[in-house]
Length: 551
Image (spheres, rainbow, N blue to C red):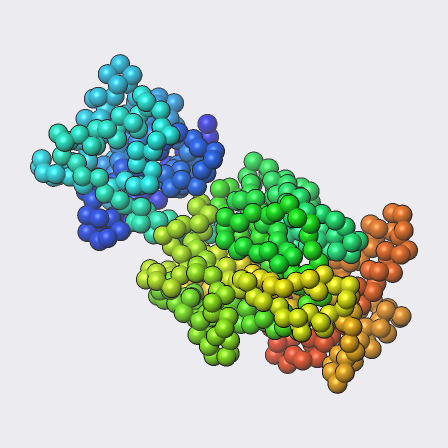
């Protein structure tokens, strides 16, 4: 077993203890006199147990079947097997003098008396300074007396001891207090969160996007489930997209979610179904875990989007920007939901309020989703510098009228789309200057739109459209070496060696020209200021990758 980082252990233990002493009488700690973190057996089916997260936070590892208590006076006591106590031994007698934690006492499991003496020592530590009065011991309530635990384990005996009337113990919940402390990341954690975010971003950018473009460009049949499995394999082994990351450092937060064809569920519990990917509105959500720290990103790809879909997506982008502004230190979490509703009302889009999710994100760290720190309409917890959230915004169940569908090419899959959904999710760090987006992949309409079938109608009086089409056609006939789609150029080079290369290259050039046309159309409508903003966003993305170049 690797060595314990003693300095970090005490730094974080003192952080917990200091906040416990300061806010002990409040609702987050329920007037507990002592904290007891009870870690049961390893559970591969539930990797986000709070006790497991606390262990990784303090020790850097999970120590199953272990009891830790931390009293008001600063005494920390751990009951565990001999091997685990040996791992913790370097911290004994090394408590910093400037901290509130005074000492670490290790108790080795004793099968001879079934830990009777050890439990008495734990109770004595819990009662420290209470002079025989009833004592409140704070636990993680959802994990207390878990039915999956084995008889004879350390924790079963301790839980029984706490409930004995002679112990004069009242068990209270301190989960909220622990959550708030762990939500504020230190510098080491923020660096790991950035690296995790960059990993998710790169899997999307270099894994999913090239693959879905290949599927669309070559008219391949692939199921949502199969495509999600491919992305999951990349997360588990980033070398597949030429990332030099130790496989032991990474894993998926959950099985990726790919959806299309009118069936969309944007809950974190959603699953990719076995239906084929449709070339209409495609959504993807994926999350990578780097050295136990989680991240998440979601994007929507629009194929042959009607004007109604484009406009609705632009509205979602407006909601996104409004929500980011509300994610600043001192603002309550519920301000995010309020900002979304306020924006829709200001844009005369009140009909879309019903399509918003009830929860617009959650705190992320060692725990993928902390249920006590969610961005909903009720949470009064305030944003603090050092917190990291996944901002996840969506519109679900939006109807697409027959008149809107009539404007797309008869060959387009959008013809069969009666309703659709849109989603954007990013990692966001709370800084002294407000919200900082950590997942940089583009989400502007020109970044996520694909036209593979021309509209049936002509451009009419759309002068921007006419100009864009003319320039795109000139570029197709006489390439200037200017801005082209590098993604499709890459597809072109790989397809050139395959059967039917000439036909595929022709189709790629057509698709590339159409995408260039869309970009030119968008640029024709944008102001110089917006162009400047796009350049800035690109520079920030490159800068972000440089800071975490080991990924």
